Amino acid sequence: MTTQTLTLAKALGAGLRRAMTDDPTVMVLGEDIGRLGGVYRVTDGLQAEFGPRRVVDTPLAESGILGTAVGLAYRGYRPVVEIQFDGFVYVAFDQIVSQLAKMHARTNGAVKLPVTIRIPVAGGIGAAEHHSESPEAYFVHTAGLRVVSVATPQDAATVLRQAIACDDPVVFFEPKRRYHVKGEVDPDLPLDDAPPMGTARVVAPGDDVTLVTFGSHVATALDAAVAASDEGTSIEVIDLRSLSPIDHDTIAASVRRTGRLVVLHEGPRQAGVGAEIASVVTERCFEFLEAPPVRVTGYDIPYPPAKLETNQVPDLDRVLDGVDRVLGRAPSGSGATAGVEVGA
Image (tube, rainbow, N blue to C red; front, top):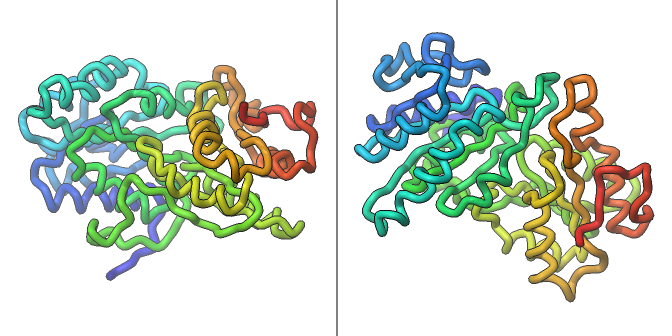
């Protein structure tokens, strides 16, 4: 095992490089990913190493990129598509939900479309609305897609390789404001030694509250666990890693011990991933719950201008307020706790 200290962005590039080395059918397609190396330099150096036929600079047309990927997968390739920013994926929505997600079922299993769609997501970088969105609920709702979200450099490298090797189409979310976070990475970790792509991970053990999140807010949740411990509250933090399927067993096992659930995500609250988790926990753990589940989320509004995004993105104070609510320390419906709501 050889580890390196890599940023999350560099770990993604290392994962891509290993996948392309191992399998000549792996191709990378996207806007400015070749000579430029991508807006975030994730694909830097790949075109020089593997050539322009495997690292393809495409026109600025996401629907065309995804349509091409569907055709390539149909012919036996494993395309990896980069969507430059989260809000740009919407013009390819038809190709993803009507073609990519449906083809395996439509052909009674005869056709597999192993396409990986890399999408930098969420805010916190001072960008405009189409560069700061959290579209996960659209794809989680779509049967036929796997949806994953990484939070650490090691997961960035390993889960990306798992996604590429998977015969199902995978939507792969990357928290763009965490691209420069560094960590120890073994880019050559055998996939058989890695946790399965569909499993959640307990990243901080605790006894009083279960805090479930994913992507960029895993760091926020860990900060909340440290802050709460100073007041004698023990928070168990779970990184979902997979949003579809969701590892409900890991969540339920935690909630049965703690009796309390807080779900944290940046996307809108209405019909978000947090609503699904709160619902399933209520169904499976009702007799263990000491309080209703609480969701700490973004507001149900279009993403605001950059100078207002600190009000939109859940922060440490809002998470700790959610913890206080589920512990009965803060009243429900307080104006000071906007953006936090007790799950129905």
